Image (cartoon, rainbow, N blue to C red; front, top):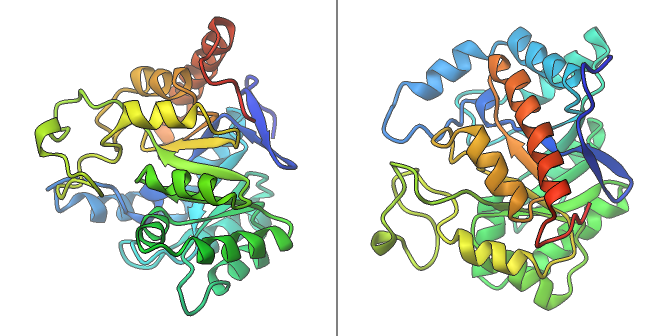
Length: 291
């Protein structure tokens, strides 16, 4: 597919990835909708197979060459359509968008979720953020190391997602071989953000309204990390405008931004991301591009 304009890109390992990545939460109805109980069902009704494929087509037209999607997510609202639709997209429409798989290894089965990603053409795989948080909290960095090794043995780039800054801190301290981190990053001055005095010292607030409770600490630590960083939740699940959220992420060191998008948002988001990346590169960053 011909792109309408060039989207800046970087490389993680051997994989060239657009700076803006299409997220998968909206597709599975995992919408982080605070107390609006109807939104997950609305998402699943909106994102039919055809609508998902149209969204990926728009991404490709706008130079977004990568999407992140789960492997049979336990958090999907109903059946997770990602694998089925991705295979349809490639076989029926000749779609070329790359897939980085969000996987769900278990302590008693480290590899099955990853093997599914391998068998379905993923170029990369990472451990789901909740699992990364949990295993580091319970001092099981050894399990993460085994998962990363299996991913890399199969020729995929390997990553770890997290909400807690302790995760990259622990992996860096242990010298674990991993190709990239996925760490949440967004500002904390939007209307529904949890007040600083009420934020927990560990973990996330209970109201599904905030995913990076310590942005300043995250930015400071990630400056010391040489591995590529995919930032996610950069719009705080729709609470922050892309102009503000993308600029905050890229100016403060993120190499890529993973963003869930409706089809009608793709073009504007792509234009904003392209322009912000260019301005950030020209102005200079405290953290150099690591990909």
